Image (cartoon, rainbow, N blue to C red; front, side, top):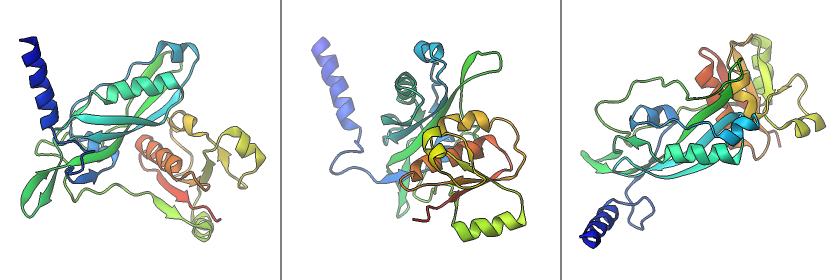
Length: 248
């Protein structure tokens, strides 16, 4: 009987289309808001005891892949304050469930795979107590179905130096540099303030004095700049965020 039950489980697993198969279903992508609105089961990570003891805090961002049945097939930490937080965030993300994604192909809703990301904030409050929070969802859960082929990720305004100069003449803005303190001290744009990526969710928890934030994005940092922009936009209602493209 035990052998039969194991065989049944194996059959069910093989029956679920894999996003890594040669004949895999269509692959979609959406931003985090689009993903979260389709969640049917959420698990918030716990704050690892070792991370609490070391006072490790910051943002954890995971790249996730959703199978056609709405389960998570893969979760990879793109950014995390330490290895314990990365492991715990991954453990939680793998337990999420979503409305099965589909793509409209000639009027037929074909099962699809979905790539997106999940973000969690590991922080200490003003009393020193650890807590884990999530970005506020802009939309309620979708009752009618999952992402389809017309889902597009929300874009971040990308500007060059000339556009930055024009913007700065029109209204107040603040340029931030999300590199670590060492590279920032070695050289940075005049007027920029240093907010390392791990500190972005904490520094932008309260209201800002300006309504426009420009992230100075250096070569090879596009993904980190995108993460910073998403964190700021999720925590600062009414604040515009732009990314300054590298000039070299």
